[in-house]
Length: 88
Image (cartoon, rainbow, N blue to C red):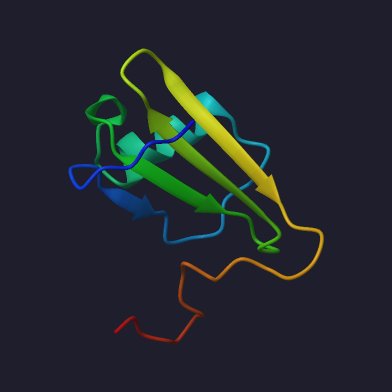
C-alpha cells in the first residue's frame, strides 16, 4: 500500500528505463543519477521505453516497496522529452 501525504515528494525519472531492473537497479538510478536518498521516503516513478510498463519505488519506513503496472491498452504519459525538444 502506498500512502501519500503532502510531505512526500514524487520524482519521475526523465529517461526510459529497462523494466527488468528491480530494487537494486532502480535504487542505483535514484542515488547515482538523481542524487537522491532512497530512505527519505520520497516516491520515484520509472516508465519503460514502450510506455506500457511503469514502476514505483518507495521506502515505507520498514523497507523498500516496488509497485509494477503493465497496461494492456494505451500507454503511460512520457516523462521525458524527445531528442531536440525542450522541457517547459
